[in-house]
Each structure stands twice: as C-alpha cells, then as structure tokens.
Amino acid sequence: MKQVEVNGRTYRLPTRPAVVVCVDGCEPDYIAQAVAAGQMPWMKKTLAAGTAVIADCVVPTFTNPNNLSIVTGAPPAVHGICGNFLYDAANDVEVMMNDPKWLRAPTLLAALADAGCSVAVVTAKDKLRKLLGHGMRGICFSSEKSDQTTLAEHGIEGVNALVGMPVPDVYSAGLSEFVFAAGVKLMQTRRPDVMYLSTTDYVQHKHAPGTPEANDFYRMMDRYLAQLDAMGCTIAVTADHGMNAKTKLDASPDVIYLQDLLDGWLGTARARVILPITDPYVVHHGALGSYATVYLPSDADPVALGARLAAIRGIESVLSRTAAAARFELPADRIGDLVVTSIHSVVLGTARSRHDLSGLDVPLRSHGGVTEQRVPLVMNRKATGLDLTRRWRNFDAFDWVLNHAE
Image 1 (cartoon, rainbow, N blue to C red):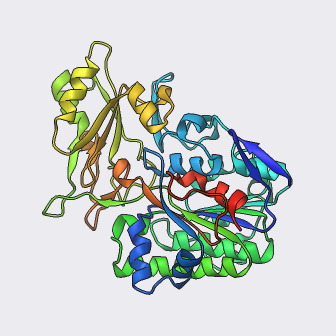
Image 2 (cartoon, one colour):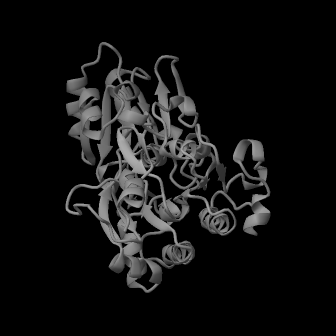
Image 3 (cartoon, rainbow, N blue to C red):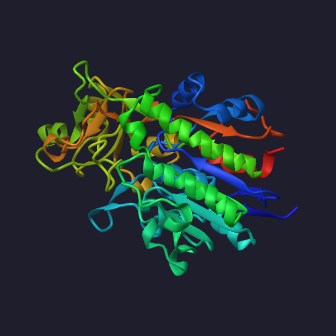
C-alpha cells in the first residue's frame, strides 16, 4: 500500500475520501448537550457505531498552534507555530503568526498532494489559509474571502456560486456553516481524496453548551456531516481547543492584568507581556485568554518573579522557558522567560488600558490554558489497532482516518 512519511509519522494514502474537521472551540460538552437534546442524530449514531475518545489539544489552546498540529501530526516544538501572535525577539517586533515563514515543518496536506492525492482545504478565517495551504497543490480558500478566489492562488474560482451562499459576516455562525456547505459541494463535484475543514469559534465564545444558539450550531454541523458520511467519506471530528466561562459573580470578565502588575514591581515597560490569543478578530474575546508569555529585563530574577506571580489567586502555573517548552512541547526560542496560565474561570491581560471590552455583549468565554485542553476526537468508522485507553491528541486525527479506519 502506498504511503507517505511526514514529521516522523507514516500515513497510508486514502482508498476512499478522508475528511478531518476541526471544530473551533468545541468543548466536549457542546456535543454531549446537543446529542442529549436530540439535535445531533448523526453524531449519536457515530458515537455508538464509530470510535470516540476525549483527546488533548496542544497548549497554548489557541487556533493557530492546534490547526497546524493537526495538519502536521506534531506539536509546536516541531512545526514552530506557538500562538496566533508572538514577539519576534530578533527583530524586536510583535507580529501575527500567520506567515508561512514561521513554519518549521511540512504539512501532511502538502505531502499527500505531492504523492498524487487531490486535496481540498476550507477554513473559516483567512488568517489560517496560507499556513494550512503552505506548499500544497490543490484547493485552499477561506469563507471570509470566498469571493476573492482564483485558480492561480486558491485552486478554484466561483466559490460563492458553487456553494450557493454569499460571503458570510466574519462575526457570525454563518462563517462556519459556509465551511461545511463548501465541503459538501466540493465532495459532490470534485470528490477530493483528502479534505480538511476548519471552523471559527464565534458561537462558542458567546454561547455555553446546551443553549439554544449552541444547539442550533451543532444541529447544522450534524446535518452536513451526515451528508459527507452518505457520500462514503471517512470522517474524523476534533477541535483546536475547548472553551470556558471567564467571569466573576457579577458576570464581568475575571482578568489578571500581568503588564500592570509587572510595571508596578519592576518599573514601567521593563517587562513585556505577550498574549498569543491576539488576532485580527478580538470583538468576541477582547484579546483575553488563559495563557501568556513574559519577557523579562536581564537584571530581573525570573525565579522570584515567577513565585510572586504564582501566588496570585487565579494563576494556575508559572513556568520557566525550559519547563514550559518541555511540559507543553513548545519551541523554546519563541516563548518568553516565563509562561503563565490561569485557572478555568480567569483570563490574563496585558495592561487594563490596552483591552477594549466594549464589544463583549455577553459574559466572556475564552480559552488558552490547560483547562481548555480536553477536546473530542470522533471517527465515523470502527478503529483497528488502536489502544483507546492511551492519551490521544487532536493531531492524531489524520492517523485515525488514514491508518486505522475499518
């Protein structure tokens, strides 16, 4: 059987269409609540007849690191994408981590295309498109800019006419529905050998599991997954991270402003706090997440400062660069002197004055730390040769659909 090797893992080429779906922000309870409410009949059948575990995503539990882990089959220490945003210490600049120049490893998608497979990628936000499609021959476009596709750059044109939907609002459930609708249309018209679908977590940031709005979203998703299943696809569904409420008793955001604390302890702007959750779409989370990295001046004592931060109520852990790189499988040269995570109900900020929370029209829900690490990993086939009691990762999804599906 033909196979490819990518980042130390071997994958068989598919004999039927293989589809991996990354549902952004899919805390496992979203599926549980929707199934219990009768809103996901396909998923209920799949959980009974297929294969399912609760897996771990990578920390930081943000979009870019986890999507790239899924398509490389490896943690950030291998592929290099350790956030949505980072401090480029060599050039003394804070930048978005959307450029493929930050990638340190090839993707499985590119390798499968090189091996002769037809590959299609549909992502909700355009920020991920160039990373996911790096080096890949095939179809790769976003819902956000579906009206701008060209054969030369995206491998397809006329996407909106094909899907029968206009460009969705970036802050809407429709941005994710377009991903699923496009996936179904591509499978009907092009039948790619391999397809990767990645949604956005707009709904999950605003609505808790079991709410009418959340159940509506998962009912929509279930309908499209059933259509892909009916076309003979082997499907794995996973997530880039979970999601938790991050509020005080009065429903206001429960925030620890690290930059303000460090400015008070060390002097203004001597330390630099980076929030890797930062991306161009901050209305629904205000750039507040449960993971931060801190760069300290050379005369600061990282051990003493780490202990002082760790003593603050709401802090889950404070790790040195070396300890964080080891525990979370991160590239040590792309994180700060300290890595800070907060508990499930608390988020981390820089300075209070830098966060515009006026766009939060519902109580804050966010992610980033270890408390959002549990995610579903579900396949619509029985698995062969798998020990389901071991620790599974979201980046095992392609291994499941290509190597272990009955």
